[in-house]
Length: 129
Image (cartoon, rainbow, N blue to C red):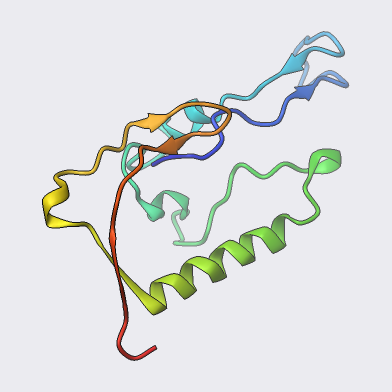
């Protein structure tokens, strides 16, 4: 699985957390890559597996939400827009990996965000849309 952001937003400690002594003002940069590839947390951390985000009852589980003052007010809208965009693309088009392209290379390119290496795909409009 490839996460876009390698690290989360920079946070600063404002108070003691669960009796752990971290000095006030300490900058914390969560490493999302280590969380998303944690072998004990995910069923298949190194492959695209949407079931990773389902709990035992097959309900959607999202563990990376920020709450409180740091919460994004538009997060729900962003999730909905992303869902609608992906569903619309999948309904209207078929995405085909070219036969002459060989195996896909999932090695990420690191920077402020992580992206896959450039690749080409064939895209065909579905007949009944």
